[in-house]
Length: 341
Image (cartoon, rainbow, N blue to C red; front, side, top):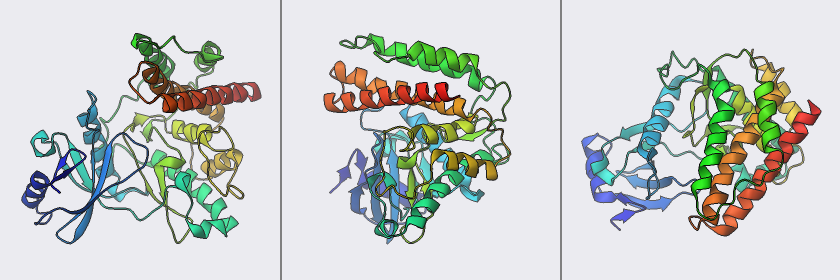
């Protein structure tokens, strides 16, 4: 086997030899899942196992830049409390495999949305502890001194919150160019956008954000209730870290039926997540509902993009319909949060 998923093993092996990462053929290649369009490939070389991440075969315009940014974040997190896959090396030379890519250490962990490890089935206290550990991960990201770790120019924090509604509404409007998409049929779309603009927090402290923080993007330990790694950093930037907490609340299984974890008994409630975050952060959580509503708004619009592409024949129709249902659930959740506030 000389290649898998757009990765030429001969050229990859030669490049790794030049980087001092081992010599010999690539062995035991295995495509790893996880629901992302990016390629995640595990393999062995010189007796050591590596994980390679590259853009999808049909790259988007910013795919290579996304790989560069992800690798940069992982490198910056090396000496922080944030659990993450350790970065090994980055390659920006497209001649090696046709795209930018990076190598990281493998992580022995399980994705909770694909099934908690067996030990969690029989330990209710483990299930409670892992929920708290997940929100601890969000707090740890927000606590990173992004300037000290070399990420001072990683984003544009000035006006971050002010840009959000308009930026994502433009994203939604861009789907109108897709043939067959009639436009968004999302109840309370305008009302929620207006509420976000009118109730936007006036003061906040910039920090590192993951940008897509939810249960599907963490790996949990098999032998203890702990987060082994936070993965998929492609939406990370410098902004308001409370959006990561909002994202977690918007996607938490007792908040919106976008994901499920079984067994659920014992998992902390959304209110417990907020309390736990407050225990380890000095950030002002008085507007936490606003961040959850923004997360519902943003994620719902992102998912609606796949629905629009499906109607245009550019994505699987069943997947598009399913994600549209998630969009409606997220906007319904946003409406309930607004009413409760």
